[in-house]
Length: 296
Image (cartoon, rainbow, N blue to C red; front, side, top):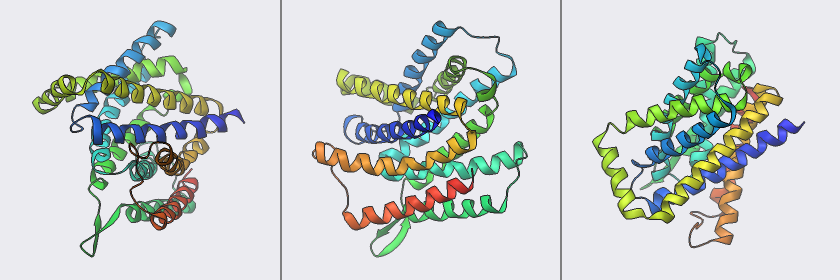
């Protein structure tokens, strides 16, 4: 049952990455526009290391799918960084689980996977919990938070990449997957860099941020790679559906990280709201997890 440890550990790492990214965007880098290029550069370096370590087989159709998956994944990063700039890490971590809904729908349309009654129930539980998590009270009225739209688009891109790469998990080992997908992310970064706004933000961040911030960004991306590697290991050893369902524990880790960091580094990671709000989020995350488990 080693795959369960890898699956749960990957979600703990992803939750930590969300908090680190939130801190970088909120306090270290002015605006999220430059961060996708940092991501592309770090992922390209990791892809080259994977290539040198394991070599690449002939790409074929699976390789092309992996490159396309990486390209789409970069589009997800663009909207993820926009969401993390205006929403707290715990919310973004919870909302990222909505990609299970998009994956379910896309799998049904393109892979002809059957939607059972339990999956439909899970579908509505996930959507209901996600909307409830996104609601904010402003001037006495409830409205969707500003991070809701960007993270929903990121979820759609992420789910699309997951559906494209699904078969590659079964046909290739870890290093070729990391290499091909990394090259796709780098191509996506090149496409994003065509925007003058992105290039200007990147140059500004290099000039104003300093080596410490760049090191933080690289550390975040390296942690993200560790999370992905653990996820790939879990998929290679255990049932894919249950490994994906275990992704629903990520919001709980995110809340735990928020509590721990607020105690250890209160000036850097202050808690935003009180205990009642935390209890409400825990309840909604439990509903979210139940929905994801039904969709497995």
